[in-house]
Length: 497
Image (cartoon, rainbow, N blue to C red):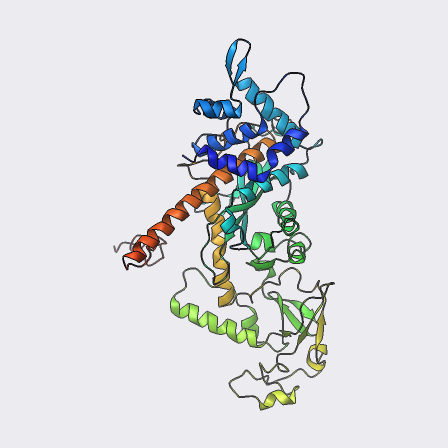
C-alpha cells in the first residue's frame, strides 16, 4: 500500500487544501475533519482497492496509527474524552467541499475552481524529475457510469440530473455501440517524445463531462490552459474521434497553444477534399494537380500487414511526398504560411518549370501538364490561409511511416484507462462511486488517477532498478512478451477438417 506521507506530500505540493478551506463557510461549531485530511483519506481508500464510498474514507482514516489520527484531526479531545471521527462528520465536510466547487446552475461541465484544483492535484502527483521529461500527451475518453438509474421514458427526473445517455464500445464481435447512463471521462497520458527515452505514463490532465456535452470540446480548454501554468504542449496524440471535429473545437485552439497534432483521420476526411488555387487538398497537405489518384487515396497501413506490405506502403507514401507543395515559411500571427510548387523545389520534373527538367530522371515526371495552369503552377509561391488545412494538418504526412511510428504512442491512452478500470485495483464500473453529481465523481476520479500515477511510478522505478542490475551482470534489459494474435497464429488458425 502507498504510504500516507506520499499523499500528504502531493496535497501540500498542490496547495489545494487551503484554497478549498477558504471557500468553505465558517460554521458556529468547530469542524473536526479538515480538507487536507479528507483528501488524504480519499487517496488512501483508493490505494487500498476500496470503492469510492465515504464510509470507506472514514474507515481508512480511523485505521491509521494513533499519532497520524491525532495529527490529521481524526481523533480529537472533547469534553467527554477522545472523540473519533464519525461518518456524519465525513459526509458533512465532503458535502461542503462539493457544494463549494459545484456550479450554481449545473450544465454537465466542471466549474473553473473544480477543474483547476483537480489539475493541480494531478500535476503535483508527477515527480519533479519527470515534469520536463516529455511534453507529449496521448488523449482519449471513456465511459463512467452514474450509480443513478436513468429517468423513466418520457421524464427527466432521476437522482443524478447531470448525467445523460452516452455511447461506448462494447468490445464484442458486433460493431454496434452500447448505451450507458453517466459521464465521459477524458484524460491526457504522458508519453515519450519521438525518438526519446521512455517515461512513466502518468495521467497529467483529466476532466469529466456529461454525455450531453461533447467530450472533445470539454477537454480542449483543459489542455490549452497548460502553457499559462508553465507546462508547454508538445505532440498531442489522438484518434479520429478528435480529428473529425470541426477545427474550432480541437485543432485550431491546440495549435494556437503550441501543440503539434499527431492524429488519425476519419475516413470521411481522407483523400482529396477540394482544391486551393489549383492545388489538391488531401490529408492535411496541398499536392500538385497532376498527382496520381491512387497515391492520394492511400489509407493507413493495416495492423495485420506483413513486412513486405509495409515496405510497399512506405514506398508509396514516400512517392506521394514528392508531389507535395513544400512549406517555405512558418505560420505568421494570423495563421498564414507560404508554399511552393514541388517542381520549383526540385522534387519532381515538370515542363511548366523548365529548370526542373534538368533534374535526374529518378524523380517523377509530369507527362501531361494542365492546359490552363492555375496559380499553384504559375506563381513562384502560394499563400495558404489558416482555414484551408486547419482541420487535417498535422506534424507528419498522413499516412507515412513517420506518422505511423509517431502515432503508435497513442496506445498509452488505452493503457491509462485499462489500469484505471482494472478489477484487481480500482474497478470504476457502476457502483464504484454511489455519490451523485459531476463534482463528487470528478473529485474521486482525480484521487484514483493520483493513486494510479503512484503505482505506475513504483513499477517504473522497479523496472529501472532491475535493468541496472542486469546491466551490471552484462545482461540486456528484460523485454516484454508480446501477446498480439495475428490471423496466422496457431491459436486462431482454423483446425483442418
